Length: 344
Image 1 (cartoon, helix red, strand yellow):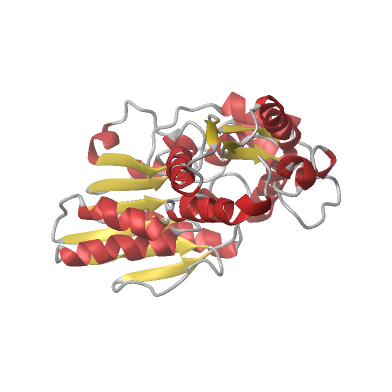
Image 2 (image 1 turned 135 degrees about the horizontal axis):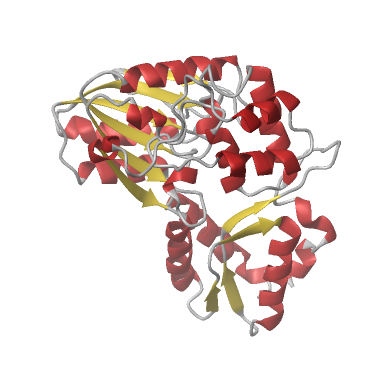
């Protein structure tokens, strides 16, 4: 469809779809729908951790639940006040930094304490949590993150490598858990694989050292020490990822409270209200390299009848050049398609 007079409606549709993914409102509703013990430790990790914690704690206050815990997020993403009893910790993203190690230590210390835990996870959780003792030095782990991020590998590949370089992934915190945990997740991973959302601190993950090594070997710029580490297998003091058969999973309950489908559902509802006369075609969430995603969208546009709205979502990836400039996935396909083609 063409833009022109439809542009205000399209902007409204986009805004309403994004609003449906508001972490604060989603967590408040999800927590309000459950019953909780009188005291609860809240562990919120990710770029939306501050908002998620505020929503959860608002609902918990309505049930007279006393809360303590942590908010681990990126600089500039706290977005408001810290709920009573919680402490905010800032850490690097997408590359870990020295503060990330302190954040990981705080999380591991918290799960080792007794009681009931409420875990709130969103995008980028594990990038902030590279605990010492696995995967070489911080600088080498930073180099590994940088290499995979630039490679165009899908998020599952990134998370597989990360699970072999940090103690806060692959279910390890769940294994150390004293007490019980309820984990609420905002998923940005296609297919909603729990082990790939924040690299699965509270999700089962089978050992796949050979797979992690294969990814690391084909990625340009991977630090040699990390390759050596993966060839040797896990560190002697690391028991590795926690498989689905481990006894700790009887103490962990996980629920995905929103995903890409939530976003697309909201977009369709908004489109029916703002553009009732326009036909809609919904595409399944998709990933892949930006040029491939752009080509698929162009094919859909070419085949669509006039006055049709394409509703799509997913997570395309980019391969960075040796000297990348400013931009992102939305700016990457300039040589593949143009805004004039999308709008025409």
